[in-house]
Structure formats: structure tokens, C-alpha cells
Length: 72
Image 1 (cartoon, one colour):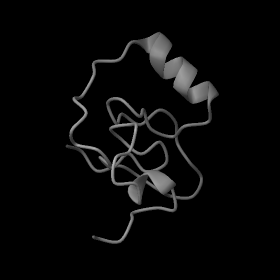
Image 2 (spheres, rainbow, N blue to C red):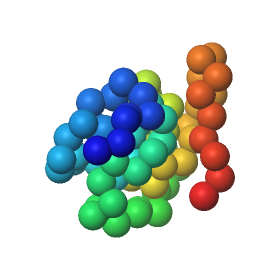
Image 3 (cartoon, rainbow, N blue to C red):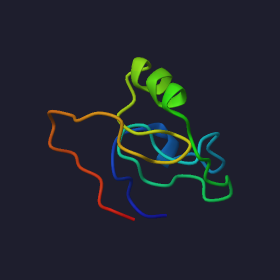
């Protein structure tokens, strides 16, 4: 097992319930297919304080920690 990209527990789970980590955007469960999200879905995810969408991995807001997602 590789070291996690961040401290989010989804990196350590063998069967994470989400495709992408909400904190760093890395794929944590590749068995879940990518979804095409709507603006409303991303707005809800932003209100939940997520930096990245857990369904598609898109960056939702900038973080002051300097964490940035590399393009696919």
C-alpha cells in the first residue's frame, strides 16, 4: 500500500464509499465510475466544506494550504 496523499481516512479504506478524496482529489476507489456532476451537486459539495468533488474529482474551491490538483 502506498502512503496517503493527505490525512483523509478514505485513503486507508479498502472499499471507500466515494471515488475521489474530498480533500486532495485523488482517486481512492477506482471501482466506482466517474459521474458527470451538475452545478447544483458541486454547490452542495462546496457547502459540505469539500475541496474536491467526491464523484468526479473536480476542484471545487481553492484552499489556503497550497494543495493543488494536477490535471488528468
